[in-house]
Image (cartoon, rainbow, N blue to C red; front, side, top):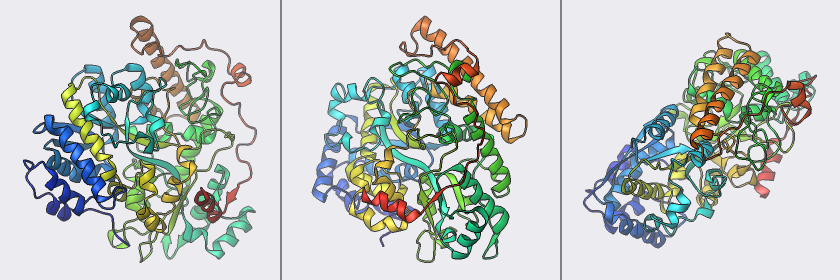
Amino acid sequence: MRRYLFSAAAVAVVAGTSSAQADMAAAERWIDREFQPSVLSRSGQLEEMRWFIEAAAPYAGMEINVLSEGIPTHDYESQVLTRAFEEITGIKVNHQILGEGEVVQAVQTQMQTKRNLYDGYVNDSDLIGTHSRLQLAYNLSEKMAGDWAATTNPNLDLDDFMGIQFTTGPDGDLYQLPDQQFANLYWFRKDWFDRPDLQARFKGMYGYDLGVPVNWSAYEDIAEFFSVHVREIDGVRIYGHMDYGKRAPDLGWRMTDAWLSMAGAGSKGEPNGVPIDEWGIRMEAGSCNPAGASVTRGGAANGPAAVYAIRKWDEWLREFAPPGAASYDFYQSLPALSLGNVAQQIFWYTAFTADMVKSRAEGNNTVDAAGTPLWRMAPSPHGPYWEKGQKVGYQDVGSWTFLTSTPDDRAQAAWLYAQFAVSKTVDTKKSHVGLTFIRDSTVRHESFSERAPKLGGLVEFYRSPDRVAWSPTGINVPDYPKLAQIWWQQIGDVNSGAFTPQEAMDRLAEEMDVTMARMQRADESANVYGGCGPRLNEERDAEWWYANGGAKPPLGNEKPQGETVNYDALVARWADN
C-alpha cells in the first residue's frame, strides 16, 4: 500500500529551486516528485501548469497573504503548495494558519473596516447567507465571466465539485470555491461491536442487537453499556462516548453544526429545513427575510427539541465520556479519541480521518499492526423529534472567499493560488494527505479504490448519494459572525451548571432575535443586507405556533425503543451507488 503523506525532507528535496525559475521545468519537477497520483495524465498536468504560468505572468513577483484554519489539508497547502506555486508561477504566498474562531474574526473585521487584512480566505460556506446579502465578497460568477476571465482556469470544471451548491447564493451566483469538505458522521469501534460476548451481553440487557445506532435512544444505551457495564477491555478503562465542552467558539459551532436538527428541531426540507433551519431560525419559503429564532416568533432555537438536544449533549458528556472531555475543544478531542479507550462518538468529523489512520507507532491505538482501522464511520443517529425528510447532519465546506476590500490585482493573484490548490493536477495528492474530498473525479480515482479498506468507510460515503445529504449552514442565517458568537457563551453556561438547558436556550433565542432586530433596522434604513435582512414576526403564544407550523410541541416520551442496523449492510448500500 502506497503512503500518501508528505514530510519536511520530501518538501526540501522538491523545493530546492529558486522562485526566479518560474517555468515549465519547475512544473515538471513538482509533477514528477510530488503531484502523483492525479486524475490527469502527465501531459494533462503539464498543460494545466502551462496555463497557470501564462495566466500568472502579470502578477509574478507579487507577494500575497491568505488565511485558513489548521487541519491537515491546510497544513499541506501552507507547507507544500505555496512553495510549488511560487516556483511555478513566481507569486509568493504567505498561507497563514489560525484557529477557526480567529479566521471568522478576521473575515468579520475586514468586512466591517473595509481594510485589506488578507487577500483570500478559506472561509466556511456557512457564511453563504452573509456573503450573498452583504455583497462584501466578490461574486465569483460575475468575476469569472468578466474581469477575471483571463485568470480563471479553463480546466476548473465547476461541475466536478461536490459541494458547489453549498457555495451558491439564493441569486444562483457562486460566491465561494470549495477547497476542502468534511462531514460529521458516527464513529465506532467495529472490533468491539463485533465481539460475540459483547453482542450477547448487550442484547440480553437491552433487548436488541448491538450495532450502528439509528436513533439517540440506541446511542445512549450503547454509551451506558460500555461506560457503566463493560468498563474495561484488555485491561484498559473504556468509555461509551466522546465529545467536547470547552467554553470557546468551537462550542457554539458544535451546536449550530446541525446538532439541533439531528435531534429533530428543524423543519423538513433539504438542505437546511423550510421554514425552520438547523439554527432554529425561521424563513418562509420564497422569502429572503429571516423571521425569528424564538418559539414565540415561529422559530425553534428554544423549542422542546432544541432543549432536548442540549440536555443530552450535557448529560452524555458528564455521564459517559472520559474524564476531562468537558474541558476539551474541537482540536483537543481528536488526539483523545486516538488513545483507543472510546467505543463510539455520535458527532465525529471526517476531517479527523487523516490522523485516525496514523500507525500505532505514531501513537494511534485505533488501528491494528497492519494499519487497518479498528473503527468505522457510519451515518449519524437522529433524536426522537426527527422526521424523515429533515436534515441528517452537517458538512463543513471550507471555501476560498475573496472580499471586495481586497485590491483587484491582489485578489486575482490569490484567485490563481486558490485554483492551483484545487486543480486537478494537485487535488488527488492533496486529498490523499488531508482526506477532505471536494472533487467527484478525485474520490473515484483508482488510487482511492486501492486505499478505501484503510479509510474506515470514508471513500464509500463520498462515492454515495448521501454525501450531499449532510449540509452546511444555509441562507436563513443572515450574518453568521454576529449570530455565531452568541452561541458558545450560552451553551457554556449549561456545561458549567449556571443555567438549565431551557434557561440557556431561552436566553440564546432572545439574544438572536435582539441581534436580528438590529439587522432589520439597519436593512430598512440603509439597505445593509440588500433588502434580505431579518423581518421579525410579532410574538405569539408558543401554543399557537405549535399548532401552526412553528417549533414541534414536547413529546410525552423522549426515549423510544432503541434501534440499530448492521454496519456491513449499510456500507453495501453505499457501495451499490
